[in-house]
Amino acid sequence: MTTSQLDQLLNERAGNDQEIVDVDEPVVKLVIFRLGEQHFAFAGANITEVLPGEEAVHYLPGMPASVEGVMNVRGDIESVIRLDDLLQLTTNTNQSKAENSTILLGRTKAMHSGLRVDQLLDVVDLPESQLKAPPEALPEHLKPYVTSLFNFNNLAITLLDLDAVFTAWLAGQG
Amino acid sequence: MIKQLTVVLFCHQNQWFAFEASLVKGQGSCSFYDPKALLLPFNQFLNQSTAKDKAQQTTHWLRLAAQSTDAKPWLLGIASEAELIELPAEQIHTLPPHLLARRTFPALQAVAWYQQRLVSIIDARVLQGLAHPWLASVTPDASQAE
Image 1: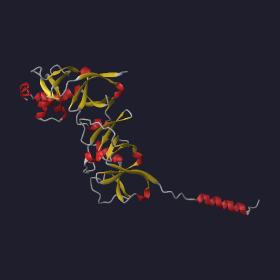
Image 2: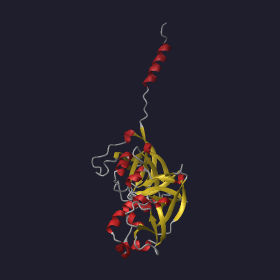
Image 3: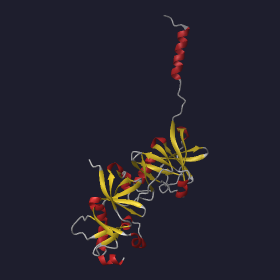
Image 4: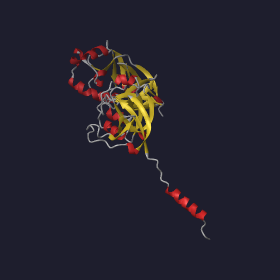
């Protein structure tokens, strides 16, 4: 049987379909927040829940200063910690808690805990191509935790590795 | 299966603490206590005290079960009268492992919710161990002088 023009055309179209390239860039979900005067983000995969800052946090004696306390999350105990000391930030804790603060529930293989942040800015899907490698000039104390930098609404955001943050905290830093 | 735990509950500096009741042998007012026993303020264990605190905030004492017969007698000074309560088992939680790892007060064993308040459950056996250095270094007479 000879090939008709229609067959030929359909074959060409089928070939074209196979050549279609997915132009969607890979994206990464990020939770962007402010701590003190600086802006950071965690990978969304590590943040399981965002809770209002007014949630009751109960002071727990006998803990390092970075432990704000514990909270009751659906009957379970969840700690709430601050990263200011670990990241060497200066924050007016009382003021930030009273205003826009939020508690992010973070989870990694090492541990899980609430994290008090001063303001949740956004949760976004960012193309991976917009993530830039951290510069050499990055402060030494941040280098273990920073995976990349990016711009968001004209703000320079530092993407933190929550696993590295929690591992350092467990090791007694902050 | 244990459904509830009897504990001795007390308030100290606006924080609630409890011991498993079986590890507490008695309580009383600081107006009346055995002069042979050392009185160690609870603040001292929490590393929160000043000499002024010790004098002002210890109004009652608890006698914890002794771990060994040769241990010096001592009383735990607390800032309020303790009460005996039943804590439902489902309200008692072990500390998350990362808090156990970072705690600065080793006798802190667990936490519980009681009347919408957080209760820190203290291991009386560990507290006994923490008292040993003070018991070894302080004579009863010195304690009375404070």
